Image (tube, rainbow, N blue to C red; front, side):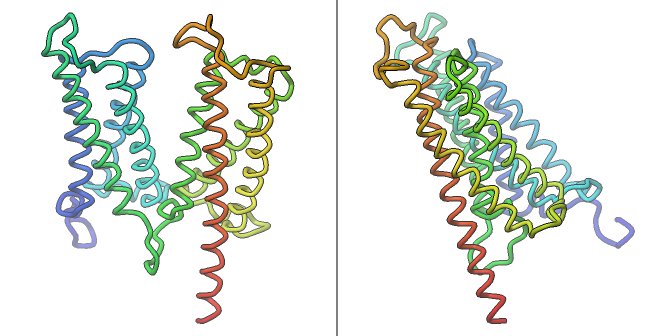
Length: 308
């Protein structure tokens, strides 16, 4: 018993839907890592990414579950609710990516040279990874703020969750840029890279401020207004980058609108340029949705206060 008369361990960490989701995350993560290291195997950059994603998410889930069960999170200078929903959203995206990449590169209908056991283990890894995705998604759904309910933290809102997705998409863009994208050939494409980096920094800043409970650090305006201002700036910057990048990569004057036949599979600059262009539009759409929702949420809260 603690000094306040309560139990040392948090029973809700086990006996609740949220606790069940986290236990499922641990079980699926442990199963995936065990099967991959035992027989399923992995190789190349894609396999390393999948294994790193599973291990990172498993370690993160262990820390979150332990801190929640022992109530030690109260010793941390962070907003626990914001931190956990951010971790769950990020892990969901990591698991979704690994659940697509691993079977795409390692699962075949015919048995490999190592035998059918390897194929069966790889199928089992894919199934467990999908179940892990559902478990992390369930945590996000359980923690997400709903209309009419008291908002526990900004990261539990749609706008907060969109910030996590925006950061994840930006990481995909950076990965494509690093893979022989030839972005340094023109000043315009370098400008696009600066835009991606600046917007990612702004998004990460908002997330870090929220998780660390520093939402009052902006003295000249409220945190809600600061988020809207940052999002509007990001929308304008991504709009410019989404137009400039395709022009300087696929126009006949600067590049090629079609994939060169001599370009090696899996190591082609043109493929990386396409990935950057596609996910630039994806992130632009995410920032627009974020801006609309943030403004709508601001209007709803204003009307609520005026009625009170």
